[in-house]
Amino acid sequence: QITLKESGPTLVKATQTLTLTCTFSGFSFSTSGVGVGWIRQPPGKALEWLALIYWDDDKRYSPSLKSRLTVTKDTSKNQVVLTLTNMDPVDTATYFCAHRRGGVYYFDYWGQGTLVTVSS
Amino acid sequence: SYVLTQPPSVSVAPGKTARVSCGGNNIGTKSVHWYQQKPGQAPVLVIYYDSDRPSGIPERFSGSNSGDTATLTISGVEAGDEADYYCQVWDGTSDHYIFGTGTKVTVL
Image 1 (tube, rainbow over the protein chains, first blue to last red):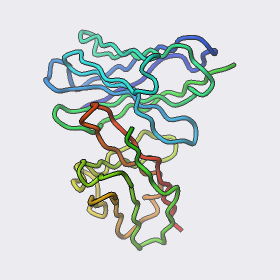
Image 2: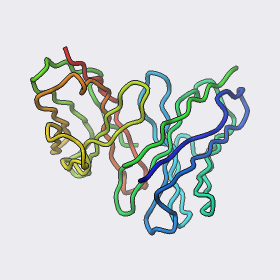
Image 3: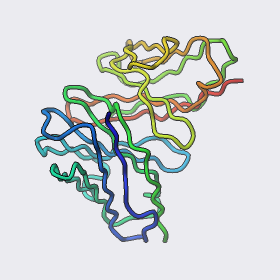
């Protein structure tokens, strides 16, 4: 059974750096093709893909946020960490992590999401 | 960058058929995936690779994709189908994932 859960601060100030952790179970980065993605959703708005890290440590970032995003993984802890620098109130959103099975291009399991509010 | 456009809302009476469109340039050449999201919950995959259903998703959910439009069809709509629906594609050139603008399906 695959599960994912996001954790991190619920409130950050503008200009600060956001660090979120995705802790997962039921799969491993030892499996070829596996990936974990990050997707966010501002209140009342659409989903926005942010980043994805692959089993082999290859990484992909949204072009619009690439300069501010970093994604890393800790295989031994079954965790993925997302950092977003220079936070702004427009970055207020629910942040989700999600599982991508090897060889497919969709997300089949999602975390519950964590709401991050950015204060000015 | 590639853009996916969905109608903001679709209304349907119980028992009828709801169709949610997802427009994109030559989207028929890409694989389209659909997610259902209820208030306060994470998205759930309901259709993958244009028309396949994950286990546990009712047969009432189906999908098609051709030309510049992909369509999610919900037959025999039930009150529990009221949710936001998002389409998603993968851009193979850049290895990026793209979500649609989302459609709120309201059951009258």
